[in-house]
Image: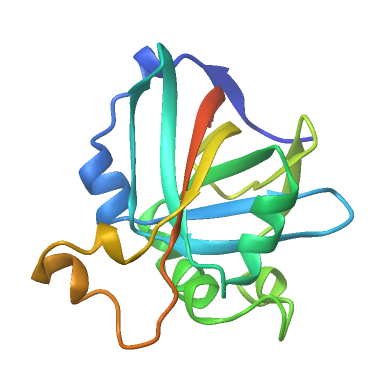
Length: 168
């Protein structure tokens, strides 16, 4: 049981530049048996192919990448400022090495089988529509190239149709 209520995207009053870039989000993918999450501050919301979409990027070295690749759905969870330490921990710690969800004090819940967190104030359930590995052609100016060190792997871009929006 969870405390979320479904809403429409047009009812949401959010600024994606603040919500994603400054407040951060958790990207979570997997099943009820096995899932992982990671903190992200890159991504966006918009309309593509006449669908409401969210996009995000994940490096192949991240544990969450494996779950996002294997599953058709992922969630984007947004939190109030009181969860900043939990999001910091989920960004700096790998789920391969510890139970970071437990260490962060988060409670997993599953909406239509998609993992998300009870403590979130907003959850977007996304159906994966497209993924594309980025490569050096994407790095076209200093602002982008400063985000990649020598030998680092480039992100994979994921576009997901927002099939459900949930708030508290």
